[in-house]
Length: 231
Image (cartoon, rainbow, N blue to C red; front, side, top):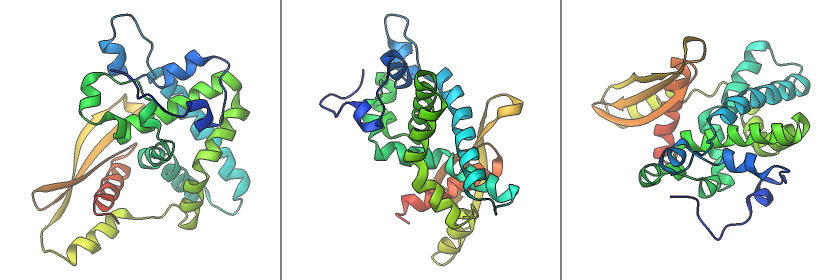
């Protein structure tokens, strides 16, 4: 139970030195670790809650100021792509963030260090921790350094990337089996729900994704299916 050893110190990886290292430790602590620890241990869900809002503000402010010609709808689509679980998990993998996480044995055994939801939550937790430790300016510096490639990618398509259409066109060129989507999970209160969708090719599940709407969850499921095919 714990994090891997022999790693580059995380402050170097993040390019931010914490004044309060307990904040960083909490940001890296998954609830599974806290549940298995003998002593009471803080974990990262509260920091994730804060970081989610800070992330949204920073990305919204940057998009508003940098792209004055984009409509409200286009800004919303770009932001959704940038702050999605897939985008955050990809950014986390570039930092090798999973290797620094404190996980319980159960989560470790099911591949938690590479699970998109764990990684995305960790990124939001670190953003929340940096905000508390150094303020909005430092949090903004970290977010934009980490997510500028995702912003540029989304802007190139103005957030209109349609993974469902891409997946359908690909599979229909190979097979006559039906492609279907199912909502397989819902979490959170009514005002802040997260949906989990699965995409099936015939009876076989080929991808799963999450989002703040059913449509976003289906898009992320299609994206996961395409990524599993290395597309």
